[in-house]
Image (cartoon, rainbow, N blue to C red; front, side):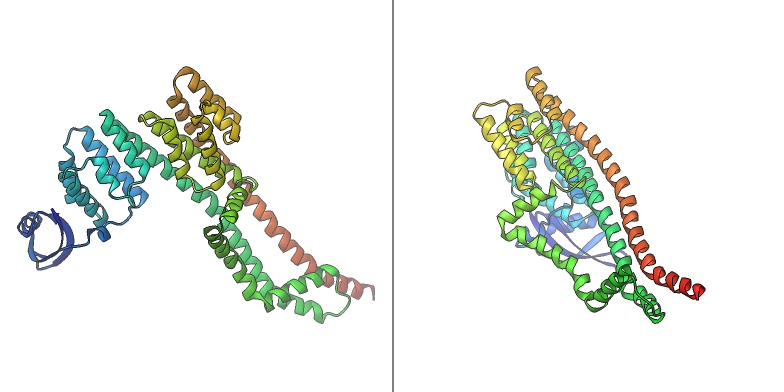
Length: 400
């Protein structure tokens, strides 16, 4: 089966273009005629690899959900992929289904077909599917994957919410300060200077800051963007700086602890998912290390894995690295002692999910009044610096 790029026409004379899988041009013509299209021209796509693009997280979740539901209903895998291909709303899904159909039809297993698309399916998903095939529990494994992907999507949304809100408010406050210093303050200061008399220290400081903004506004405005670009570039070229920055992220007041909870939530969810599907703990810890980009956490996981490989219990391996809080270590230890480690890991994921929601709500409730106070202090300083000389001048006029 090959992928064809076609040009067709419908009954109203409207031209339609697209790509679809077909055995040959006759098969393509038959498929298009069922959709009310008449084939005009068809060209096989030679380099199929370029047609497969990385799916958005939501699209991947939707694809895996449909795969799980139809597979659980007893529909053969080739029929599932053919139906998904023919009803796909996006070219990415259509091309992906066609690619998987072709490989499975040629004799590959489902996990092998997924592994042939590493840019779309992570190694963790491929190995989970392979474990499901080996144990005969593929529908249950697919359901676990879908639930995990949904949870990770919610976690990513919470992370974005945590970082975007303070960034947005900070930008607004910064913009207000720049406007005041460049436009409003110089006009008011000019009026104050013309009144004569001694200028107090806070007014001198305001004049100095305002002059700096007026003269070097391009440096002040561009400095945050330059710093951001530097923080994004340096970690890519300097491993020591990347590790330092990752450690600093975890030490940011209030926000750092939430970032750590989000990372550890993904780790516990991944370890629980791999353990429930029959993947050994040591292999599961490899995937746990791969899913996090934070070098500090990654190193701690690798050290814990080494201890566990040398015979230490899982709880002891994690406790030695001080990665998880003591309560989580106790939950893991209870799971080991009762033989229900999978249940304990699932409870840990639930605990972190609830705790992250509460922590984000508390930080957001704290950020808004804090930034409001900062803006109020800046405005208060400007008012004192401007109104102080005016009040002194009026007082002198009354005395005279």
